[in-house]
Amino acid sequence: MTGAIDVHTHFLPPVYRRALEELPTGLPDNLPSLPTWSEAEHLAGMDALGVATAMLSISSPGVLLPERQATVALARSVNNAGAEIVRGRPDRFGHLASLPLPHVEESLREVERAFDELGADGITLMTNYGGRYIGDALFQPVLAELDRRGAVVFVHPCAPPNAEAVSFGRLIPMLEFPFETTRTFADLVLGGSTRRFPGIRWIVAHGGAALSVLAERVAWASQLLGYGVAGADVHAEFAKLHYDLAGTVLPGQLPALLSWVGGERLLYGSDMTFTPIEAVISLGKQLGTTEHLSGMYDDVLRGHAELLFPRITATGTV
Image (tube, rainbow, N blue to C red):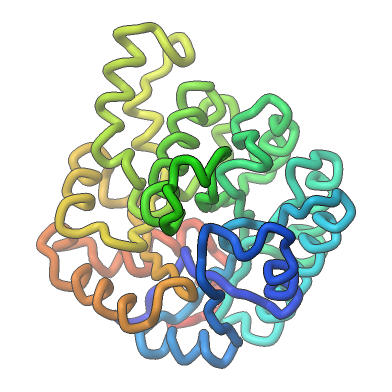
C-alpha cells in the first residue's frame, strides 16, 4: 500500500479526550479505555501502512454533551485542533469538521466557519444526535446548506437510543455500529434526503455495514409495500453513495457490496486510532491481495478519494 488516502481515521486531541473522560455516564460505547493519540503516533501509523494523507475526524460519540453551550464549545475546539494539524502538515492531513447537532442554528454557523475560515475538507456526522437521526426534518436546514456547498459528508455510527438494552453490555461498536449505519442510510434513502440534497457526497462507513446484504431487501420491500419516495429508485440511490472499506469487509462483505455498487464508489479507510495498528496492517494486506479489487486497487487506495478531496491532489502528495 503506497500513497493511500485514508478517509476513515480518527484523532483525539486533548480537549476531546478530557470531554470524554468527564462524561457523567462514563466512557462511551462500553469501551474499557480510550486509545492513546498524538500527531506523531498517527504519522508513524500512516507510514507503517503506506498512507500518504489521513482525513481526520472525530469518532463516536461525537461532540454532543449534556449542555448546549458545552456542545457548541467542544465542536469549535475540536475543529480548531483539526485545522491546526492540517495547517502544520497539509500534505499529510485533511480534516472533516464536526457539528454541534442537534442544535441547528449553531451547526449552520459552524458549517460556515469550518469551510470559510478553517478550510475544512468536509464534514463528519454521527448517525443520530440524542436519538434523532440525521434524516430527521429538524436537520433539513443543515443538509440543505451542505448540499449547497457540495460537501463531502462522512457519516460515522454511534450508539443507538436505548443502547444498553440492545448491546447486552458488550462493546457497542461490535453490532450496534453496523446496525446504526444501515438504519441511517436506509432512512436517508427512503425518506428522500439523498434525492432532495443531491449535492452532498455521502461516505458510508465500514463497507456499507449491513447494507451490503440488506440493500436488495430494502429496495424490494420498499417497492412491494410502497415505502419511500414516489418514483425513487432505491437501488440506484444506494449505488450513488461512496463506501469506505474500513474494518472486516473480507471475505463476505466486499463481494456482496460490489454486486450492486460500482468499484468507483469504494474508498480506503483504516479506522485508526480505535483499531490497533497491527490489525489495520493485517486488514490492509487482505485488501491488497483480494481478487475482488483486481484492476481497481490503486484507485480504491487513492484515485477515488482524489475526486472527492481535490485539495489533497493539489498538495502534490504521493
